[in-house]
Amino acid sequence: MRKAEWYDAAAGPHRNLADARDKVEHQAKRKMFAHTFAAKTVVAFEPVLRENLQHVPRFELYVDRSFGQLLYGHKLGCFDRGNDMLDAESREGKIYRVPFIDSLLNATMINNLLAIFSHILPVAKRLAKHHSYKKKGVDWENIVYHNTKKRMANPDPEDDLFTRMLQDNKGQALNVPFGEIMSECSSMMNAGTETTTAAMTNTIFLLYTHPVVLQKLREEIDSAAPRNEIPAYDVMSRLPYLRACIEEPLRVRPASSFGLPRIVPAGGREIAGKFVQEGVIVSVPTYSLLRDENVFKNATQYNADRWLTEDAGEKKKMMTNHLPFSTGPRACIGRNIAYFEQTVVIATIFKFFDCKVEEGFQLETQERFNSNPGDLPMEVTRRAS
Image (tube, rainbow, N blue to C red):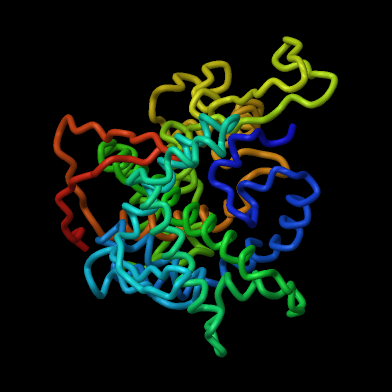
C-alpha cells in the first residue's frame, strides 16, 4: 500500500527515503543507499562510538554529537561547549547559531500539524508560514544545510556515512544531487538523534526503576566485559539478556508510536477480516500493535524476561509482531545503527553508573512524529568497582 498524502507535509523539493511516496523512486533510493546502513558498515564505526562514550553521563548531548560525527565525519562540538547550540546557514550565506534539539522538535511538530491538513497542504503551508514552529523548521533546515555544505567542501574527509552516500560499495561515484543529499541528511539526523535519544531514555528509566532486572543485566555484562573497559560490540551483541533489555522498552515505550498512513489500492483490500474500499487511508499505531494481548502476555507490563521464553511458538509470534522499526520494503533502513548504538551505550551506562530516579516519578511522553520522552532527572554516581 502506497504512503498517504500525510508524508507530503515534511517533504521538500527532493524526497528522501522516509517521505518518498512513489514506489519506483523509493526502491531506487533504498537500493542506492542499502550499503550505507549494512551491518558490516555500521560496526566499522565502533571506534567513533567508543570515543564519544567517554562523555556518556551527558546522555542527550552524547547522542547528538555521536550521530553527527558518524554522518558528517566532523564533531558538532556539543560536549566542548556544554550545550546544543549549532551553526546554521541561510541560502544567502548568513551564519548564525540556534539550538539543535529545540529546532528539530519544533520542526517535527509543525510538520505533524500540517500533515493533518495534507488535503489542503498549499493553503495550510501559507497559513503556517509565520508560525514560530515553522521558523524553527527553517532553522533546522539551515543546520543541516550548513553541515552538509561543510562536509561537501572537505577534500580529505574521515570515513563516515556521508562518504557512502556519495559512493557505492565499489567506490564508484553515485552522482547524487546536492539537494537530494541534504534531504537524506536531514532525515538521518532526525532519525539518528531523536529516535535513539527516546529509545535510550526509555531504557534507562525502565531499568533504573526495575532493580531486579537491572541486577540480572549487570551480572551478565560484568561477566562478559573486562572491569575497566568500555564493552565491545562483538561481545555485547551476543548477550541474550542485554538484547531483551533493549527489545522490551522498544515494545512497551516505542520511540515512534504513530500509525504510518497508507492508501488502500485500486480494487480495495480485506484487512483484519473486513473489506476496505480503495482510496481509504488506513494505519495501525505501533503503540497498539506492541500492546496486543493476543501476542504479548500482560502486554502493558514491562517484562524483559518475556524475550527469554523457551516456548519457540510464543517467541516466534512475538518476533513476528514486534515491529518498532515497521516491516517490509518501507521498514526503517537505519535499524542496524539503532541496535548497534544501543547495545554498546546501554551496556556502558549500566556497567559504570548508578542512577537514582525519584520514587514515584513517571516519565511523560510528548507526542510529535516520534514519542519523545520528557525530562528524566536523575542523580548519577560512578558505580563502585
